[in-house]
Length: 332
Image (cartoon, rainbow, N blue to C red):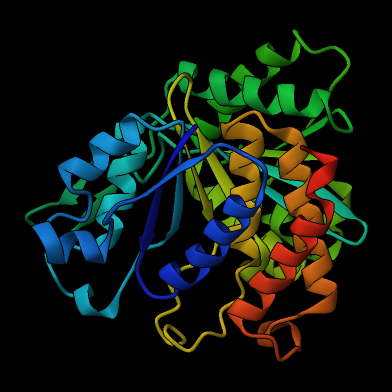
């Protein structure tokens, strides 16, 4: 099983190292191949997504991505973040899964990743006006809705769609398509909620949600709200899945250039993303569960500074590796 690893920028290489240590500890035959992406890609080739990196990703079973973004390229014409949008488009990923776990909370945000404002028509007019259009085709909505309903079947069987039904035509289309898809899942409860109320509920009572389904921009915002409300973005993983190609697995946090190189970044989100890769990308549910257990154990025993502890990035990784070594017989 081949995994292409993209460390990217800032704290990316530091947290990626801990994920690779964990994957190498598990009793799996994995080929882990590191490739330049983001800032390193620009420095080496002038492209945040070098052709050789893209080709390697297309031939992989899964892609593990750490973080992109650097102040070095903040005002440049070519920026690391451009590579992120391109790799999502090139690999055809459309379903972004963002699980959120905390005491009393077990929800998953399902974000549509291929449409909406980020990919719609955009530009500037002669009078100085700038515009970004939000567009969705019914088929884009149908496939992400089916993803959400299928996930719900293995959970508490509840899907909540967050939208702006009163003012957006795209939201009205989302409801039409979701209603139609729901007829094929009579045992799954479907509800609708305005996105601003959904944000408030994620802060006030995140445990009320099971599967939260929404479009690209709303999902981008709500997933960060959920992460902060339940412990911080340093803990949050994500998976971006395609219909038939490799998925992209990455933590929600950014590249955090302010703490890069200090060895204090929390690698939990990166490690949980590796667990998602095992489960959703490689079909190894037992190993995914074990890695999540190892991260849970490390969060209790070896918290990093952002969680009120004193552990370094490597200390946290050591705790995870030790747990895996002690318990790997369970999945061998």
